[in-house]
Length: 401
Image (cartoon, rainbow, N blue to C red; front, side):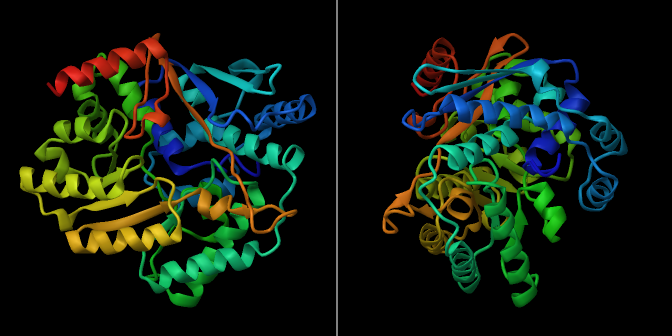
């Protein structure tokens, strides 16, 4: 990794919130590869493990700290904490390689100390896999492809950001893409629709705006720490505690941790007015738009005063289609585009055939001794302990009767 800031913004926003509210809570994260055919060799696994251990060398540099202080609304106490923060992978991480080439990773420790591991480790897994296992791809035409995507989005007046850190092919792919974003802003002007990047280091490096609010783990943890496993009110608990730390900043609410229906039932008129908007990360985005329009009407909030951020498996064509739909519905849309920006490759041996990205995630598994889960609006994305999942699904089914 290039820097301790080579991570997504929402990991830092959440770390600051955890430091303020839950400094002594123990957690466990668990890695999952959704495509078991993408296996590791012993050689590649050893290289990955060495790279993960190398995280211990990362520190926040003075120029990075100065930039953060200018661009991000964190308290001085957090900058002091981050300046002294160090990864301790040998203490926190248990990594094993199965006989089938499957990688197992658990991360355990204080939430404040372990929250920054997820995104760098996912990025390292992808980078190692494509450097040592699947090498049938090439950088050829990547810059042209990046500029074409950016130009189409800008020409169509789409407002968008790079959300591609965790599943990027490698660092250089995202670095080059964000450099293209910078060049496009210089060419078309600051109002061209390019919001920025979720990657804090690349925002610092290329003079872009860092973008992000919260991840599913904040709501997952709230279900255990605040709502005491009351799934019906976990979203509200998470958002209300978030506002304790950020009364005015980072105001996009994530909607699908326990399904959109559960979220909107718990998204009070006060919270709907207070938050800047919502993020759709799974399920059918057009169905979501209709649900959000109906929700705003129900609670008496002008839907046009809020923002919907789409971040689920987007590409340029789908963004254009969704934008047209949102405009018809009076919805202000923003787009966080990940894999399509930073891991869109063809096979070198067969240029008409796609070189598939990895489909990998790492989620909270346990918080303060309590198993936590994530559902989403896509059953294939459910994660967590099987027994805990079953209990939550039963509880949600009972709520809907």
